Amino acid sequence: MVRKVAIISDGIISNVIVAEAARGTEQVDITDQKVGIGWKWNGIEFSPPDPVATPIPKLTPGDIIDAFTDSEQDAILTSTDNKVEKLLQQLSLWGVAGLPVKATARLQVMFDVLVHAGLLTQARADAIYAQLGGV
Image 1 (cartoon, rainbow, N blue to C red):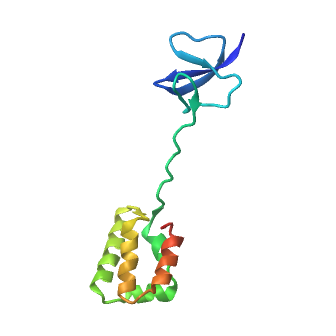
Image 2: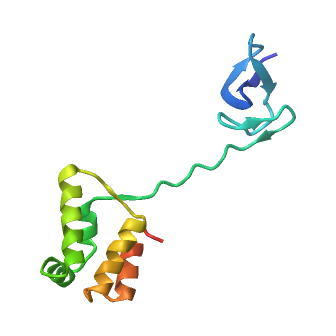
């Protein structure tokens, strides 16, 4: 009799085959079950695989700059605040190196500096941060 069989490796379904039997592997008949590769087997029952973590969005310096209005960009680019100038240097280096900027605490620090320098309101900084994938 042909049946749907889960091949189990280290307690996890590593393959699903249609066969009468396979030798040398732990097998469980799953003909009437809705399971698949990656599901866990504890010897009695199956459980779904662990959820895959959602990756943090990666941003280029261009993505960040494009989130600002033209007037905000002008104010930031002409700022004489030392911390703002340092942020611009970092963005420039990230762009030259081709390194993506992650929407993490580093991005929040950037907005904190811009608010402190009076270049953005907190509400506007929060809106742009959310637009860029920050929470």
